[in-house]
Image (cartoon, rainbow, N blue to C red; front, side, top):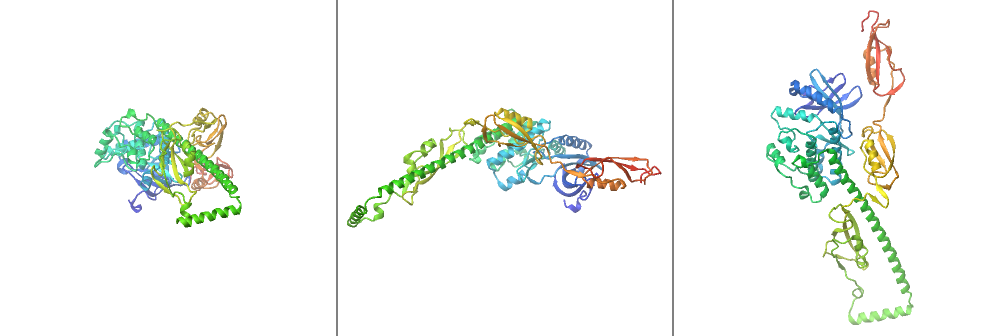
Amino acid sequence: MEKSTDKYIGKILDDRYEILELIGTGGMANVYKALCHRLNRYDAVKIMRDDTAADECFRKRFRTESQAVAMLSHPNIVSVYDVSHNENIEYIVMELVDGITLKQYMKEHGALPTDEVLNFSIQIAKALAHAHSKGIIHRDIKPQNVMLLKDGLIKVADFGIAALQNDIEESTNETVGSVHYIAPEQARGAAADARSDIYSLGIVMYEMMTGRLPYVGKSDVEVAVKHMNTEAVPPRTIVPGIPEELERICLKAMATDITDRYQSAGELLSDLEQFRKQLAEASALKADVSSQSIETENIEVEDAGRRKRKKKSKFALGSGVIAVLILIILVFVFVNGYFIKDLFSTPDKVDVPSFIGRYYEDVINDADYESQFKFTVTVKVDTEHDYGIIIEQNPKEGESRTLKNKDDRADVELVISSGNVIQDEIDGEKIVPDIVNKEFNEAIQLVKKAGFNYEISEAPSQSITKDYVIYSSPAAGEYANAGSVVTITVSTGPEEELTDVPKLVGLSKTAAIDKIESSKLSVGSIETVDSEYEAGTVIWQSLEAGKSVTAHTKISIQISSGRTGSEA
């Protein structure tokens, strides 16, 4: 649909929202970019299509469900600002998100790395947990309904409206829901609940991890049947590097039997955050191992220095003795036909043995290995072995490495297991829990449970909801002394904007309203009173001119009726 043929382009709804351009279309409604003249802000306006709005039942449900969703307030949910109708037009005003859909992101990047899968999944789960706590089910979780901002923040769109969308599609014999993400019970025609959203999130996780959907077919019906009757191929079969725990979480979320799934978004969120914590600790262990490796190399340097000093002391022989020795060697070489480089050469190759299954410190501290190999150690998340057990090596067993110089050592990389035990405490220090984006009372309980005291600080935030945690110090995953203080910084919401109250007295009604809105204030009550002043002029304002107040504060005015008692 071109701008020139769209009847809404240029239209101003309720003397406030100027429709600028079409930015999205759907079976139920079209979405436009609009300028809110009252707040001087760009919003997204979703307008119900004429054919849908013609049904009175759909119009009423559109209003009711939109108003319910407007009560949601969470940083991972697209905000609904207003619900209204104008000249038989049903519309909702939403936050205009500057980003791309998760579907677009996956098309560009393919299978996503573990840290991104975890980050995005946790944010979506937080959005679901908040909505479900308010009794609102999404019913159409899919990457197309998930927005990704430039800073990595996830925002889920179309909460609540999806149920109406499905009913509209059903009434027009179109596909109900998004069949590639639909829960089995929805495919059977049963009512969806919170666990249906969890199933759909599981499918999204599967797609993020593998770069493909678990169920495809020649028709929507075939795909729906597979959701009901087929077990998906495990993600690790497609991408072997996927961590087993992440695969387990994904497959539990998308279990065909609803009773085998996570029973709440909070339960799913808990497992996701626990696994992220495990990865963070494995990363910390890796840093510790790297530190140990550096210390080992320092010791090697000191030993090399001692060896060199010892060689120098041995070299302090009389020059005559050295000359005699050199002469004897030269005669021996000449007589027997040797070359000097052959006489003093060392083997130019070293064979690499198997280190798999051994404890890494036993290997790197072995004197025989130390003279032949230079080790680097990395940690890999692995729950099948104890911490420190070597599970991979490069070069592999039996491979050889050529040494250019006599004192060279072959480089060998050892990959060790992170172990299956999460260390909540190391040397009396405890790990700080992840409390970002949690309601501050919940955050306090988590900090206390982890063994810390706390103090609260406040700061404004454009992206974190009021009374939710922006960050902590020390940060999540860091270790701190038990009983020490964790500072919890809580959002006070967006920073308040101040504006000066304009002088309205003496202006006409129209000019006064324009002045109020251009000053970032809101129009309050407008009352007409008997007065000898010129009809239609403002004779009183509720806020004093020149005073600084919070932006969007309401200001009321009185208009003179004039001597005739009528308003001009």
